Length: 371
Ligand code: PHE
Image (cartoon, rainbow, N blue to C red; front, side):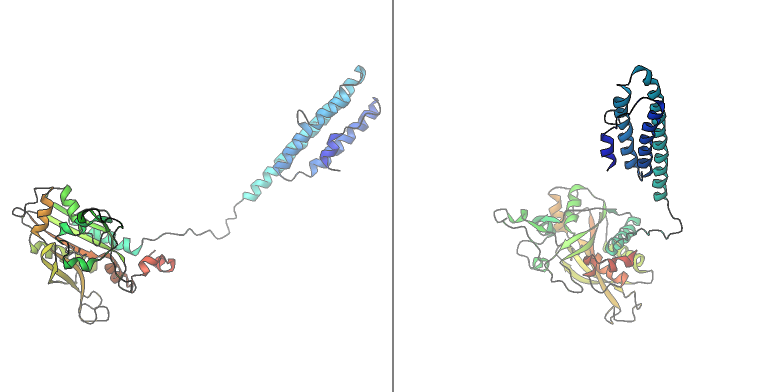
């Protein structure tokens, strides 16, 4: 028989003599003891409390209704005394059981300080972010601020204002994803994924009068098939310096210093004539191979030099586009230089990464090495 079922029925008293009452109460106390002995957790203790002391359904209330209420006046005192003893007995069991289950709960929470700890997983800076931050710090020390710009650009900012007129062959080297169904818009307003960070040069100059010294890191997109050295998404660091009397010597000194900071003071730089529509003159910059010191090794394809970035003096035609919004960029009064480098390539060189795809794989076995 379950405790609940016993609880439903109160045996009737056989008489009101002290012996008969003692016997009846002793029966109830045995019941109390049996169920109190089985209390294992705090839920069971609460159920026991309700079962015996509950104001409406409790067994004590039922006993009072069945035995005390209908008793003749002369028996009430005898029953009342025994009733109170029973009640204290129940309360005492309840308190004891409560303490015991509380101790059990504490016991379960006890920490075994001899067990080995759980090691937290520590995150690591991604090698691209690490390289980018290093570059930003180098230019920050030279007084450059840091800017950002949108990854979705208009044709005007990505090409036209940088002196790539519509149909110019230099556009072919920077094919990219374009937003669909824009044929009704004028070409200059059509949206595309930017192919370089150079459009941020224009945004910066349109909103800020000279002097400007700024570096702009960011993601760029090109229609390039992925292989060990190409990825359709990669990262560039753009630089722009505009002021009075800025010369090619300033450009050379700035980049030479930056490369020495990045790869060590023994690294040399050399500049080759090149072409970009938005710089004139333009140059490609090589650094002496930081791995072999210029003697020639596999990394520099035995040439002793590694090509790392493009640069040049800002083309007056670019200032012309900017002047539509900021007349202060008068090419007769100011001059400037700009440069752009691939952050991925620099990260690969610095950390000896042979496949650019690893930078985008999200493979923890690769990333954990940079912790
Ligand atoms: N935007 C050029 C590229 O992506 C690099 C560059 C930037 C060249 C600034 C000159 C000046 O190839």
